Image: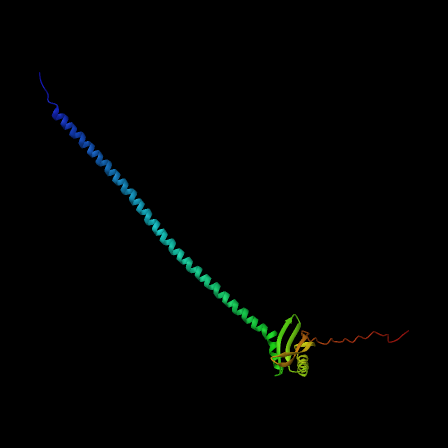
Length: 200
C-alpha cells in the first residue's frame, strides 16, 4: 500500500492562507489609513477655511466698529455745535430781553436804593426793592416811565421796613412792557363829492 505524506502540502496551504490574510489585512489597513487621511485633510481644509472666514469677519467687525465710532463722534460734534448755537441764540435773545432791561434799570437806580425782585410775565412787569425815602421811589418811578421800555408805571406797595436796625421803605411797582409799534400815520385821501357845474 502506497502512503502519501500530505503534511507538507497542508503546511504550505496554511502558510499561503495566512499570507493572503496578512495581505488582505494590509490592504484594509491601507484603505482605512487613506480614508482617515482624506477625512483629516478635508477636516483640516474646512478648519482653515473657517479660520480664514472668522478672520475676515473679525476684520469687518473692526471696520464697522470704527465706522460706528466715527458716527458717534459726528453725533457728539453735532450735539456740541447745536448746544453752542442754542447758547448763541439765547445770548442774542437776551440782548433785547430781560437782561438788557435789567441793565438799563440798574443805570437809573440811585445809590440809596436796591432792587430785590424783577419779574416778567408776558408784558406785565413787577419790580420790588427798598429805598431810603419815598422821594427816591417817586424819582425812580418817573425814570421808569420816561424810559422807552416801560409804560403804565404804578406803585402797588410802599411801607416802612427795618433791616439791620435801619428804617427803609419797601416798595413794589407794577408796569408793562412797551410793545406798541410805531405806526405810520394814515394818509388822508381827500375825497371831493362830485358837484354839478350847472343845474338845469
